Image (cartoon, rainbow, N blue to C red; front, top):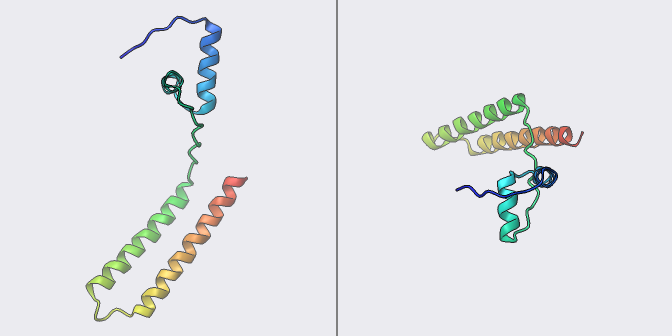
Length: 106
């Protein structure tokens, strides 16, 4: 449904600028104002390095293979070795996260 409203060009520009500053569409900004709801600024989506995504996909794939193997061959599974591998994966994920967080700060 459309709602039409008369306004001056300056008012229109100011309203659109306020909406943009909050990171929301003008429609969302207007609905919130009419309903008396405070519009919170949206957090900006961070761009993620494609190389990081590929690395995370590899780690996830390895984890999935390890879990599948452990569930299929439980009698042969060396639980200590599995836990060691899982801890290694966790360390690698923490390292990747720290690298990514440092890049976001810069």
